[in-house]
Image 1 (spheres, one colour):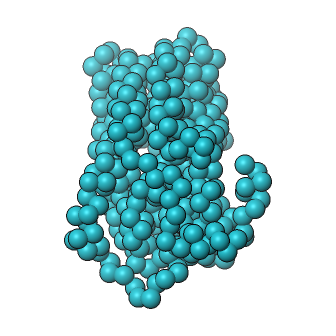
Image 2 (cartoon, helix red, strand yellow):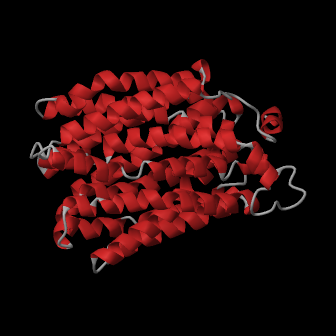
Image 3 (cartoon, one colour):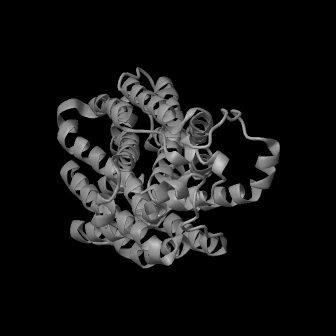
Length: 412
């Protein structure tokens, strides 16, 4: 693993680093809100279920950003699309800190969702088209661990800054990702698979014939990502609230448990991403999905902080293990001309279909007498089972050579 990374050229290493950091900082900005739902609800004079709709709005807006920035990336390049995207999501995060009322707060979270939606697809295309084909699984796992890494950063910010700045100060800190643009401008190049063979600039929108040809595979990718997003958001978004309300854990204990389970998520993403080079993408995803089911009792019904922390560690190891395969899997399934837009749009449409998750789980918990454990367990079990079935029925394209990727590999 280390040997593979050390063999990268400077351009390959910079693309992988930029993609990882972009997703890390994007997730950091997103997850700040999950720690302060209770505070925002109190300040705006509304219920926890109502304020949780801000997460739903953010998730629902992400397909718009994936399509917009993906089309820009397919026409103008991965690098300028990524720079514009990072600047925008940092700006909307900063403005959230100064929202004077609930309406503007919701509007800003929707705008943030549009910008957030563009980052993953563009960053994944940049990385997957730049690195050698044999390293895609490993880089896929590293890239996807940006999500729990961002969650980990949000946890650290909550632990260190919240007592000093309150919940609004955390959103001010969320403007820092804009500094990543300086690194991208200096170090990152367009990937060979995009830059080579471009005798003319493609149309902004794909041809109808291309859309018809790939409609079936796109529909499958959307369904797959819907299951993936129910699984990840179903195990993450309300877990801090579950620890706060159902177990009455302190701010410090919630932070510690979140650090523990995000460490598990990072390890799982890297391990299963690398494993997928040996087993194929589908088998790695299915193995991680199967592991989720027996972990549910300890994760949702563990008695005491230690048991819940252990259950959460292994739960996120499995959940993000499955996710660690996704960047490589979706990019390999994507048509070459739409690799900037296809993976991200499919991913974020899945997010849209799963965007009811937080509100759904909060409503189930309230209907069951504030039993968040039941709500978390029920949604997670169903999502893991559906993901397992969809992956078994789907296609495999592990190691497929991209347009210029083969030439790039031979040059090395």
